[in-house]
Length: 397
Image (cartoon, rainbow, N blue to C red):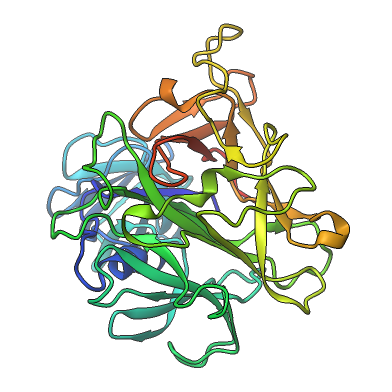
C-alpha cells in the first residue's frame, strides 16, 4: 500500500495529552480503526469519477485516504484517495465503472487505517500486530498508564499470549527497564501536535517536544520513534523488526531516527533505544542497531544537520533526497554489517534551518516524480537539529 499521513489537526483525529491512554487512542485510530466516520447518503459516478455525498460536513481534504463501505457496486468500496471537495458534504474519487447513481442503505466513510490489529488489551495497555502476510510476526507493546504523563513505554515482543505475557522482548529489562519512551509532550491536558506516517508494516510517530520547551510552530522540535519491519537483505528473514525510541523520558527524550552512524562503526548508544528483535542468525536477541546515510563519515551526526547544503539548492533551485538509509546491526567481529534499509526514509541533503516549518509534500526536481513529506525540527536530544523526509509517492517496499 501507499503510505498514509495522519496529523493532530485532521478532522476527527484523537487528542494526545497527559491523560492515561491518550497515545493508545492515537495508535488505535491510525493503525486499527480509522477515524472521522461519516454516513454516505449518495454515490454518483460520471466519467470514472465518483462523487460521494455525506449526511454532514465531512472535513476531509484533497489527497487524504478514506475507506468507503456499503455501496452495492463493489468498485465504489475500499481505500480511496480524495480528488476534490466540491462542497463540505461531498468529495470525489476515481472509480473505473459505468456511470450510475445509488443511495447506499448503510453507506459509510472514514479515514483509512493502516490495517494493523489490536491483538491484546488491558487498562491503558495494548499489543499491536501487523496483518500483512509478509510480516515477520513481531508485535508492539505499549503501556500508557496514569503514571506515564509525558511518555508512554514501548517494547517489541515475540509470541505474546496476553498484554503482559510474551516470550521475548526488545529492549530487554536488563537493557532498559520498562522499555523505550515515546513522548506525549508536556504534562498538561492541552492537545499536543503529533504526526504519524506509515504503511501496513512500519510507521513513524512524531510528537511536539513541549516536555522540554514550549512548542513553537515557527521553530518546531519533535520527539517520537518508529516501529515495524525493515526491508532486510537476508533471504528467509524472520526477525528484522525494529523499535526506535528514546532511552529517557520527559524533557530529555528525542527522536532517534535523525541520529546517523558511520559504515562499519559501532551503532550509537547515546540518547536512543534502537533495537532489532534478533541478530541475522536468529539466535542472539534484542540487538542494538544503527542507521547509515550518505553523509555519515566520521561518526555519529544528524540527518539534515546545520552543516548540510543550503536550500533551495543553487544547482536546481530544489531539494535533493538520498535513499536508502541503511540499518546496521551490532556485530563487532564483522564491523557491524548492514542488515537492511529503513522503509520510506529519505535523507535530505539540505540543512534543516532552511526547510519549511510545517509538514510539506515536496516533489524532487530530478524528474523522477518522487514526492516526499518533509518534517523539519525532529530532535536528536533537546534541540531541533535535524529533519527527515518520508517517501509518499510509491510503496515503501
